[in-house]
Length: 632
Image (cartoon, rainbow, N blue to C red; front, top):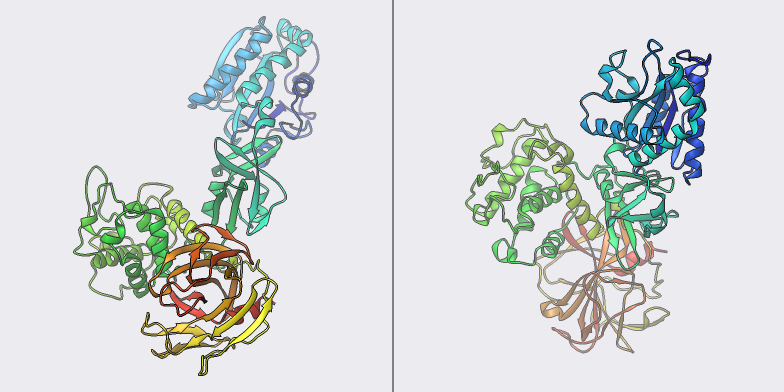
C-alpha cells in the first residue's frame, strides 16, 4: 500500500507530438491528468497524502528526481503519454522495464482497467521498454519505485484522438481503477488500525504509532528524534504509508543501535538509543555487561540445563575476551545466536565445545571440536579477533583451526561480519539485535541510566565504617517512613563472600577493602515492617540467597557518575520475611516491595540494603548517600 505519483508526459515548454485535431500531446495529457486528479479526489484520495501530481513546468529528468526524492518502497509512479507514428496506427499500450515479470503484470493490469472503461480502444499490450522507439525509457528505468509509462492512444490518428477528446472522463476513471489496483491502497481500512504509544529514552513521543499484522510501526519522522542518519538506507526499513503518514517497522531500527521493546500493558513500543560515542557494534573494545548480568541474560533465554553443562560460560567469555581486547558482550551475544542460547540443536553438539560454529558449512557438517569449554571460548575469541583486527594474538597458542584462513581486520564491526562469518546478509544485525536486548535489559548504554527517581534527601550521614558501640540513628522520611539505621556502610565482621571487595565512599573515592571488611551496605529497621523501594526501577532477581535469606535485586532508574562516566545502579534488599514482587516487575519509588524479616543469617528483623554498580565488569559497592547526593 503506497502513494501514487502521476505525471503528464512532456511539459509546458515541450509540446511533444502534434495531434490530429491541431493541439499538442502535452496539452492533451495535462487535461487528462487533471481529470485523473479530480477522479482520485472524488473517491476520497487526498492530494499530498495519498497521491502527488508532478508539476507541468519540469521536464523528464527533473520529474524523475522529484519523484525519487519523495517516494518510498510501496509507492507507484505512472506517466501518461500520447503515441504518434504514421496517422494510421491505433490503440493503447503500456511500457515496463524489460526483464521484470512483476512489472509486466502490473502493466497488463493497468491496460486492462483502461480498456474496461474505454472498450473502443485497441489493445497493443504490455511491452518491455526495449521495444519503445528510443530503445529504453528513463521513466521505467531510473525511478526507484515501481513505474509504468502508459500510451493512452495515438494522438496523430483522428479516431483515437476523437475518442480521447470525447471520452476523456472515461479514460480518467479507467486509469484510476488501474492505479488503485496497482498501488494496493484501500481507504476503507484506515480507521481500523490499532494505535500505540511510543516511548523514546524514557519520554513519551508526541505522535502515535500503529499496529499492522502484529508489527509495531512508528512515523518515519522519528528518525530525527533518534538522531539516525539514513544515507541511502531508507528503502531497507520496511516503509508503509497510511493516512498520508510514512511509517517504518520499529524492529528495523535495531540496525541503527536502537533497542526496541514492547509493553503490552500500556500498548507502548519502547525505543532506546545508545547515547555513546563509541559504536556498540565495534568488535574490538571493552564490554559493558558483568558476569552476573550475562549469566542472568542467558538463563532468561534458556531455562534448561545450560548451567549444568557450562556453568562458567559467562566468566570464560569475560576473561578470554579481556586478554585479546575483544568486546566480551559481542562475543557472548554471537555465542547466543550460534548456539540458540546454548540449546544447540543444529549441526553442532554441546560436546564439541564449539560456541561459534567454527568450521560448519551446513548440511550436517559439524565443524571443529575443542577439548573443553575454555578452549572453545578461546578459539571463538581468536577467530573474532582475526576478523576484527590485525593485532597479534596475545595468549598463544592459537587454537582456532581456521585462524590463518581469515583476511585479518576485514570486519571491525558486526555489520561487516555478514556474508563473511556466515552467508546470511543479516548475520551482523541479528547479533546486534541480541546485544541491544542485553543492554536494554540491564540498562548498560552509558547515559541511558536516566535519573527519573528524585533524591530522597537523607537527613543523616551514613557512616563509612561501623565502629563499636554500633552506630544507630533514627529519622522520619515522607517516602521511607520511620527509619532506624542500625549498621553502617562498611561492617568489619560481615560475610566472607569475596576475598576482596571494592567500594565507593561518600567522598567519591574508590577503595579496595581488606578481607575482614566484607559486608558492605546498611542495616536498618522500619516500624511498620514495610520494605519500601528507595528508588524506582525493575526487579531483576528475587528469591532466597543463602545467608541473605529472601532477597530482591532492583535495577534502578538512576545512574551514578564516577570518573566522568554514568553507571547503572542496582540495589538489593535482604532478610525479608516475604518478597512481594516478581522478576520483570516495574516498581515505583516509595512502593512496598517486601515485608521486613530475619530470614537467612539475620539477627532480629531488619533490612540489609546493598547499593552497587559494575565497574570494568566487577561489582563495586556504593554508599547509598553518595548516590542520593548526586540526585539533588
